Length: 382
Image (cartoon, rainbow, N blue to C red):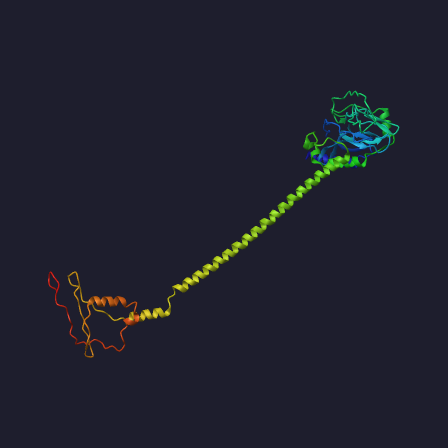
């Protein structure tokens, strides 16, 4: 909720408070900026470059650090007046930096590297060339020839506060010369500086809410170098994100195809099982149904099978032998024992045609005498 209120106040300030060119009001908020981070100055790229110190800017996600950098002077004799945060009317107001022939008021903020709170002790212009003070600047004298050394005394050397006025801020007030410098000829930040600020605003590692006052990049040799590095890092991150998205999409397609293939395989297997079950039931039903011709033959054989009479068993362990005698048309039939009749009866089911009597065979004569075996003697055989 507090962050939302801050953003709304920022929007209202931009709409209500008129923005003056360069050193005018740009942003006003109610939260003080963090302390200035301590860092080392990169090596000067070459002659004609002016050091512009880093600062805390404000965006939709809060304060973010814009790295200090060497900037090629936009014209001969140009000096940079850093921007600063100032307290007034209950809010912190950002006064943007500018280029001019004189260094104006920048809130008494000790940015370092020659910006000690008043003026600039890092160098000066002489006959179209800029001379660098090696006491506060990191200069390679084999590359840059115009170098001198002069010690700089800074009364606020231990202070890293980043705003003027209010609670805990600096108490400096502009001098007459600094006020005149603000009215003198001047120009705003270069395109490279503007791009540097935009690039820093999109880098999450530069946010104070993320780095807690220790930015990932505090300084750069040139604005283009920082922008190029961040662009390359962003491009790498974009490529990584694209690869991850492609990999995730490919995995999703493989998963979908695998699921579809599994579904088709399961459906085919289920259909095959149903088909096999139907065939098994049909074949089983067909196999269990006995042929009509076999039933007819079996029933016929059962009906037409002659009845065999067997003599009753006696008390002896072995049954008495019983013989039958037939007389058919004057012919005598050989005697057949009971055991022979039993064996022939056992063969009848497998030889149905032979078991059936001939249709023209005459029935046994009712007057034929019955032939019985002689009684068996006790203790021995006949």
